[in-house]
Length: 368
View 1 (cartoon, helix red, strand yellow):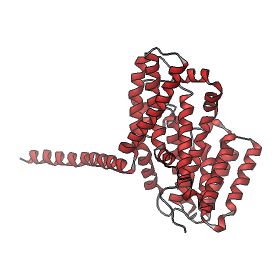
View 2 (tube, rainbow, N blue to C red):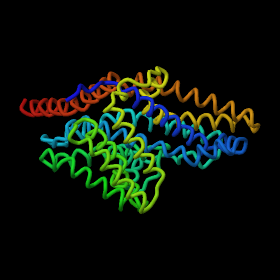
View 3 (cartoon, rainbow, N blue to C red):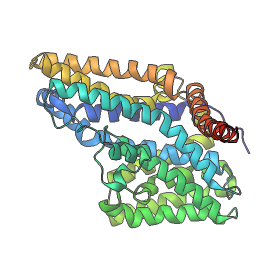
View 4 (cartoon, rainbow, N blue to C red):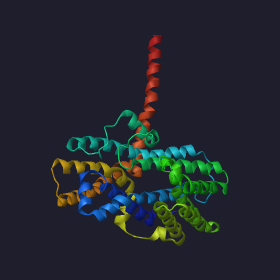
């Protein structure tokens, strides 16, 4: 098996571009700044509004690609229990995610004093926060506390489903076949019904394409898999064409061929895009709270000109990148996340130890 590099420049670039497109989609969708921008440049911001959300497919395919790398690098079955891996994935997502939810709640309260706009989430309830904490808000019907948080819940579901399928296979051939089978089921049936869009199965077509691209690129005897997944996906598109699925196929083929040819690990050498790719999750998490504050300030200052709206959006974009950089350093980065989880483990571990000591002390007092 070939050595698996820690950084893949092509993936970093794709994540950077996708994160910026999602950011621009939301910046053209929410608040008075978005309304002013669409009125001034209807073609450009209309395109961001309509198609920027398609960038989520890039994240889905990359997530499947990297999940296959981590869970089943050679197409083998998962021999250990998937539960610890699922819990680890939850912590990886939830630590920065919950910090960002707290930030969104605070900024929404501030923005609510400055303007009256439907983009501002309603005041959070305890039940709503708990649903978000356990990534169940969509399934339980709670309104989102921040834009795009549905994706974090779906990403967690997808990883869990992938791990369970690989564990259920128990054999090298059966395990990836199960993943490919569920991928086909998603493409041909579940992805055609939007009522499933709170469940992983709706998105597993794109996720599974990423996983299949990894396996196809890693083993010569599986080289035909790229043709197989392309054929399956094209057949699904003939039945019902979906631009998002066509984009997912294109990204999967790019990753598959990129790894087989070595391009994945070597190109492009663009440090700014590599950095944006590295902090893309932080950009995804913090840009909406920044947008709420920017819209609130724009409304509070009574600005209404096209120039002020454009300047506001540029400043909000720069502030989002700056906030994401700080957020990554102190919250999301592996070192920061490890410090936080270690601290939480100590706190929660201290509770039963303290309780035991208090009970022992109380028992000793009763004996005296």
